[in-house]
Image (cartoon, rainbow, N blue to C red; front, side):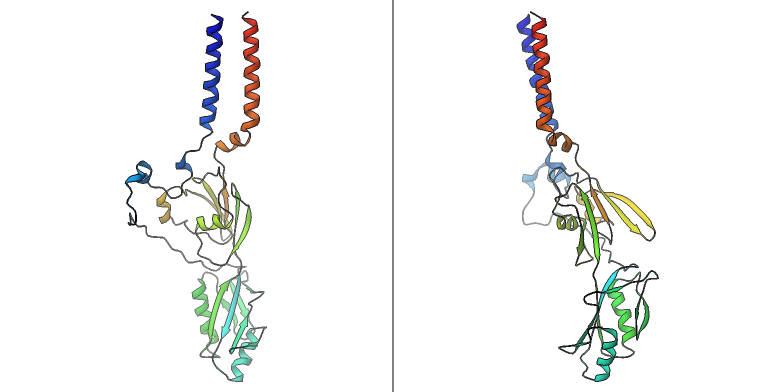
Length: 274
């Protein structure tokens, strides 16, 4: 009878450890980006070198906001001194090689709280709410009154986002492009950590004086058509951990405690049944 009880105790001990280990495993469906059901069911049946399906992207051009920093440059092919005098008033750097004058290339021009930028000659120009190309056209229209063949180029210098949580490097990233997807943003931060929950990425987005909060699921292929596919200025991305993270992090210490406790309980039980 005692031998039978001992064997049953050992079986339950092994079973308990097996359950703990299995619960700590993370299935592939929680790790693979942009999944589709047919791919998960039978991957071997998926044809190669073929277009399986297509998605229409909800492309949204970034629109300038107050306190954005813009690099605005002016160029002209004209050799007239008047042209260079005009461009020199717009650009602190003045005349450069190739008949080009560049303004705010280094420090940039800050969009004020009213959404305007201001030049000594052109005056105030409203740019908030415009795309970079629309702002470029608006500034060119103002400058063309003085120099007909002027070319204007507008770039954004402080398009940035912050990523926190289960990634391989929490940081604030300044991007050179304003059309950046969530996955590209996470890639720039070093990628997800091993036990990141890709199905519940939290995003905090500034919209005027409001902070909007929403979640995105990067495991679902249909996310490609989401209006939240692209990152916006000052977005904060918070990546939560999977539930297995805490267990795996403390697995060795927890297993030692569990094993010691069960061994002690087994010893007490054995002694009490003699």
